[in-house]
Length: 370
Image (tube, one colour):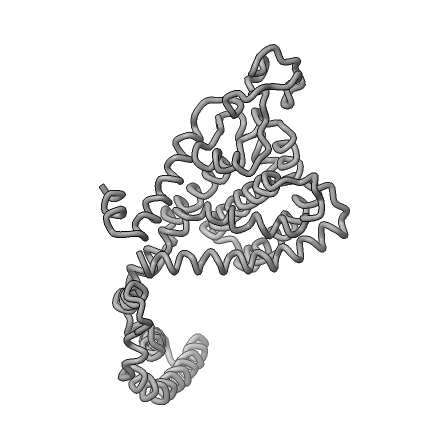
């Protein structure tokens, strides 16, 4: 019913519906119990997964197809159909994904398909698990945003209210203590600090309010007129109900997270464009496993934060683990030396900034025009 509404809403509704169909199709095929992939386009003489001599289109030992694809079109096939029989495969895949991601990438490309969860299925599992945990822990966009509350004066008013409430609590505590109690001195210091904060906030509000009032009366800020009705209407919706639009943006992130794969492949290709032995399919496998690993990292950091692990520790994990993991994956997957892997990782970090910006711009455009 929801898909029908999206499709009926216009071209951007079609994009939303396409995102849901792609993710739903991948999820449905991900649990299909087939060991290998492909439905026969000829076969070789030995199984690339276990080394058994083939006597038909599929290996009679492990069930993998004798035909192993290595084309960019095959990524599209997996995107729509997926492939993984989780059970024991997940426990063989996760340790390698965490510690030897490049080996996992290289072995999957080389033909060990039945042994591991496929990149697309791993990507699916990690993305859906990450957003499920976010929802369980109540991590979401704010729902109390309105256009006025997004202004500086509104933020200052909230800060003022918070400071005044804290000051009132401190005064109540102090009044309950005896005159000679040592805690009274500490509370007096806190109250004096709160007084200074309140005075500073009031002074800032007095300076900003007139500027904001002038901006609020400026029709050129309130009403955008580009001549493109769809875009103008979308901007107006953002202004009227930013909370709803942020919620839609958050929903779009997981529905269209697969866009990160085609956005990333050209940048990985740039790192190895002169090496003809590496195909676009190889880069796609690298990217998909890497995104899955980063999603699993976010899951781990979120769970650690939920059990009150130090913020400093979590920040260091978030800053250090991704580049180290990417460097190891590059080194192992492409057979690089450490210097070459570190250099390419530094370039990749810049590329990721570009990719993330493009991704968010696309989502924002979909949200505005949807």
